[in-house]
Amino acid sequence: MRIFLSQPDEARERQDGEKQEGGEILTVVAPPDAAGQRVDRFLAASFPAFSRARIQALIAAGCARCGGAVLGEAAISVRVGARYTLHPPPAAPARPAAQAIPFSVLFEDEDLIVLDKPAGLVVHPAPGNPDGTLVNALLAHCGADFAGIGGEKRPGIVHRLDKDTSGVMVAAKTEWMMARLTEIFATRALDRTYLALAWGLPAPAAGSIEGAIGRDPRDRKRMAVRATGGKAALTHYTLQRSWFGAVSLLTCRLATGRTHQIRVHLASRGHPLIGDPLYLRRLPAAAKTLPEPLRGRLLDFPRQALHAAELGFVHPRAGAKLTFTAPPPADFEALLTLLASTPNS
Image (cartoon, rainbow, N blue to C red; front, side, top):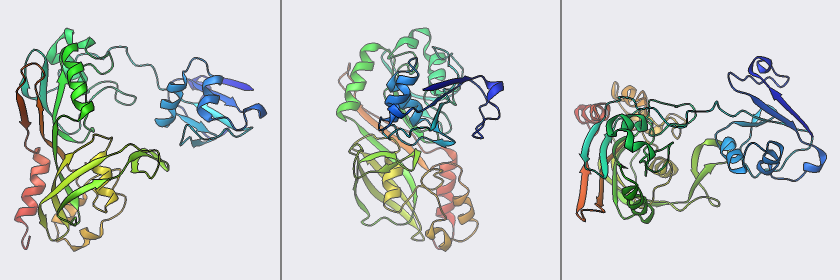
């Protein structure tokens, strides 16, 4: 087995054409006795500094390659003689820093905080977004005692919204509340309602979409409805209004909470969200029926048109049912106004 360690300057132009902008590159050539092994097991054995779980996370993040191709699955078999590389991101600080980032507080007491997350704000630090996140903002708002609640990387976070999804979120401010909220989300003892602008006209006008969700085997950044290997997911939807038979405003209620659940489920039925950068891959046929400038505004919307409008749960300490709502942000409202004001709608 041959193992190589390349520093950044030495790795700028590699034999296989790869470039690395920062951090070390770890490379190993698979020997004959590795034939048939799972690639995650082989890489963990080749690089003992990385646990198998860490290897799997790097593969999922697109930080592992075979030759010049990004590895798609941790379970695939090793190819003898192939060159495997790991591109671990630079180490991030152990604790996120407090940063004064504005957000709207809907409710706050000594145990928890409910807020209206703006679109464009990442929830917690991760490779590519080391700071400028909701966690950084919460650290500044809640103070130093918040830092250790539920772990250093994601203090207080019991659920998340995608970066470009806006709306209501709750975070824990004490370890006791962290445990209670985690249980509430695990047992689904809460109400979550989203507003979604989608292409097309769902039929029936109200119904449920059920389909297990897992990583798309063709693109690790996407999720997909999977026949095998996914996690059970159920979304209830209701049509609120439609325009031109081409655009629908839906309320979606989550019975489960999988990654990208509403986006994946609606796209699987042929109704991707307006502006969705992952699940809207071609010009929707419905868009061709729309007049300008409406069509252009909808096609140019820069994010998925999804808003967490309502969150309800029983406060674990007070015992009272709490329901929090937030109106859609200005860009979402502007689309609704344009749809409503376009003639013949």
